[in-house]
Image (tube, rainbow, N blue to C red):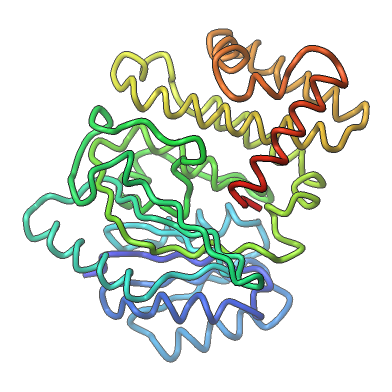
Length: 341
């Protein structure tokens, strides 16, 4: 039986994908690795096929036309046979000792019949070329090792939210949620990290420093200049996340989850608006106005909360250039403190 399906979407990843795959192989026969060659034009597909020949009981390869990161995740989820599903980007990697500990924990949970819908582990911002690592744990939010529900969680810190790197969903939960990521769109990991959460009934935080999120490539999607050049895609995903859950219904059934999802939408609104401010063109200003108008026209209650009760309101300050300057100054300070890109 496979406890975990790892899906590794790859597009021209030949320079670094082997580092990633090597760490996943530490799971041995308890895992399956699905490498999705997303229309690569380098030797990514050949490298993947060689791994599949060397590890036929562990590694499978899917070759497909280029559809972007979301299409790679979709392909992996459709083919997954593991009890849990994990996306690992081809330039990231796992701590092998932590992976083995996680698998032991999964075995124990299965033996007791207590398998949570979602497992949460720590991830690390890894500035590999600068030899700097910053861990993002969740000890203040969850009791380590305890299976709980949303009503048991404690407040998240200002720099904490549940990102794809930290999440290990049960495969059946993802399929029940109907998650399907759009093609040719960056930043879809935000949709993956949010849309399925209302289908999660039980959670377990395991305090392991497991996922290394690599930062430092100039062409990386979270690079500030790259994000600005792809702002249309960031806006699109922000809208999709904002409309992906019935927040009104959840506020009655799962109020803590509703508050978390609202907070995360606020963060995404802030990212979109700040980068539109950094672009600074008349068109970018119109896009910021249009984004807020979209939220207001689709969900007035959410608009009021985002505008007046959350962080995103500080990205839509009155006062023209002075309000914009305050917003950008706050962003620069947060970037220095949290080193998020």
